[in-house]
Length: 309
Image (cartoon, rainbow, N blue to C red; front, side):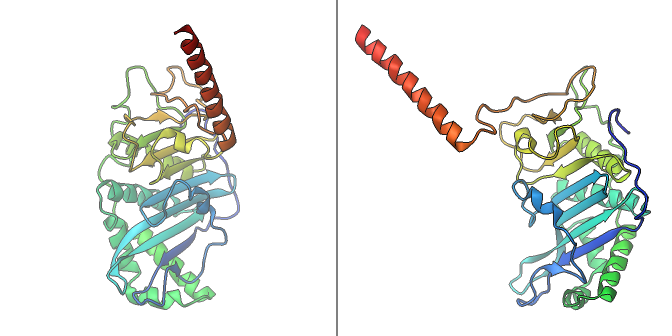
C-alpha cells in the first residue's frame, strides 16, 4: 500500500542490521544497561517530551541513511531484587536491503498488538525471555567486547525469527477505510488512539513501507494526548503516523490530520482536521502580553459601562 507522493530512497552499501538490547540484572548493583555494546547514537532521546521510555513505546524512522526502530517497555517474566518487573528495550537499524527488515516489521506489528491487548509481557516479551535468559543477561551486562556484542546480535536475530505473527488482519490493515467518513481519505500525517483497530492496521502497513525505504515516521507516543502534541515532530513535509494509548478526553477519534503538517495531494481532503489552539507555539512572553492586553481591554470596557451608569 504505497501512497502517492511518498518518496522512496534507494540505499546501497550497508545490508546488515545493527541491533542492541537493554535490560537489567536481578541484583541491585546491576542496573539497566545495553548487553555487549551500546548504540553509537541515542536518536530516540529526541522524543523525550512525548514518550516515557520506561513504558510501552514504538518508534520507527526512515530516511536517506536507512531505517531505525526503537521498542521499549517490553516486560520480562523476570523481576529485580525488590520484585519490580524487568523490562527489555530494543534498538534496531538497517537498510531496505536487509533480510531482517520484514521480520522487524512483523515484530513491530506484534508489539503494537501486545500493547493494545494490555499485555506488555505478551508475545514479544515471552520471545525475548526465550532468547535472553536471566543468566544470559547477567553475563552479557558485564561484557564490553566484540564477542559479547556479536552474541547479543545473534540472539536478537533468532528472536526476530521466532516472534509470533500478529493476529489475522493486523498486518493487512483489515478494512482500513471502515472508520472514515464518506468521501474522506487518510491525510499523509495523522494522529489517532491505538484502540482504533483500523488505524493500528494502517500504522503496521506504514511501518512496512518505512522499512522498505519510504521516508517518514511511525510513532507510538505514550505522552502525546492530542494531534497538536505531534505538530513539531520532523520536517513539515515528512509524513508521520502517530498512535497514542492515552488520548485527551476531548479527542473524538480519528485518523485526524496533524496541524502544521503538509496535507498532501488528495482530492477529498483529510479524514478530519483539528485547528491549532490559539496559544499553541507562542512563547511565554507573548502569552503574558496577550493576557495583559486582554485585561486592559476589559478594564476600558468596564470604565465606559461605569460612566454610562
